[in-house]
Amino acid sequence: MIERMRAEIAQAGGWISFARYMELALQAYYGTSDRQFGARGDFVTAPELGSLFGRTLARQIQEIEGPILELGAGTGALAATLLKELEREYLILETSGALRARQAAHLGGKVKFLDALPARFSGVVIANEVVDAIPVHAVGWRATGVVERGVSRDLAWVERPASGELLEQAKAIEVPPPYDSEIGLAARAWMRSLAERLEQGVILVIDYGFPRHEYYHPQRAMGTIMCHTQHRAHADPFANPGGQDITAHVDFSALAEAAREAGLEVLGYATQAQFLVNCGITDVLGEANVENALHYAPIAAEAQKLLSPAEMGELFKALAVGRGVKRPLLGFSRGDRSHTL
Ligand SMILES: C[S@@+](CC[C@H](N)C(=O)[O-])C[C@H]1O[C@@H](n2cnc3c(N)ncnc32)[C@H](O)[C@@H]1O
Image (cartoon, rainbow, N blue to C red):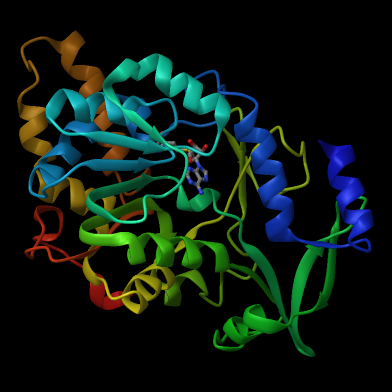
């Protein structure tokens, strides 16, 4: 993989964008292995903790008609829980061949796999921890102007003047130089193409990130790129290329803007904790057998991880955009922060 990457960089004149580097590295990382998840892998996602997240999410989905389309379904854990809770047609679009095989083995014939987004769709689209894996462009704001931070043949940062759409977007962001961060051009395009295809229904994005004013906060001058390997998080995207997860936090304002441009309405934006509480996570917890401590302890630990501000509760957000849907959605009935986007 590294040799192929070097050859591409050489052919491109010794420099590729960070977005292209991230794309190639993640293709290798997700495409060839399904060992990223769980205690022995690199990271744990909310659906991998247990069924509490999925059972709570099912209460929100219950309100919205139509099939479910899950993007980037990981091991298939969320699909398995939702299919137990809801009788729905379930579609999965997964870019990794290795993970698709794992999902098929886990879910049997209960889901239908898509190779591309459908031209038109009505229903519920779910993307949990998918947008953080969409390649970002790396940008530097310098006293002399805006640079794009790309990657050289020896896999190191090299700057050159930013141009085109990236420069346009970077100029609209006011930060004190020297300042490094990311701009998710591909995430915007991803949302735009999803939104254009949605005839009726909801797109629900859950991930770690911020609204724009927090994303480009003067103190976040080193950007948001984060890599995961064996439950260790670090900021070096060039360590172990193809063998580690590379992510960037999500600019939720950009996603909301792209959805609006395609004619969708922002239906709600809240922290994961607020969203799950609104959906009734405490009722779901209450269904557990409190008498049996051995049974209850792991579920309580799961709730703590999902809700605590020190864990996923505050950093993770839920954003819902959609068309032709009655408001408010259950998950945003209290503490909706759409106005901050
Ligand atoms: C961090 S994992 C999250 C998996 C799962 N949603 C979960 O919460 O456990 C990212 C997933 O998104 C997939 N993926 C990455 N980019 C994608 C894209 N553009 N479209 C669909 N899936 C994508 C990966 O292969 C992987 O399944």
